[in-house]
Amino acid sequence: MLPLEKEYTFKSTLIKLQSWFIAALPKSIKIEGVHAFGRTPIIATVNNKTWKTSIWTQKDGTTMIAVPKKVRGLLHEGDEVVIKFEFDYDRF
Image (tube, rainbow, N blue to C red; front, side, top):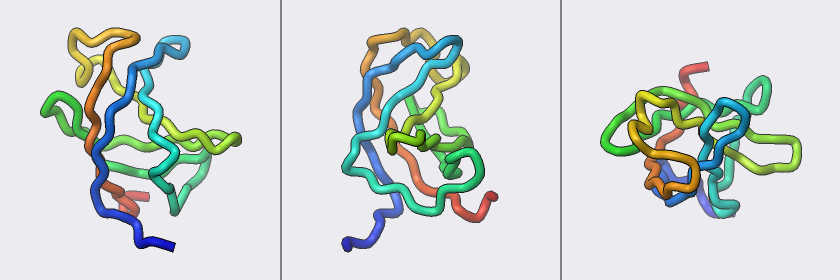
């Protein structure tokens, strides 16, 4: 098994899920250290705005990051975003 990277950058399309806007991670990014409710703490950056958040891993293995309005700005569902993140395992 290859060692985990410290930092990842990927492109994703924003999806609206009820009142949330999410970006799905590519399946090539392996998540370890999942905490309660499928959460893994990260520090993420979109549009040069950085915030502490979590990646959510669903039961089917898909993972996503919620992108809040204060970070998205004028981006909408269907817009492509570049997301950079690093794991923040010590936070939980």
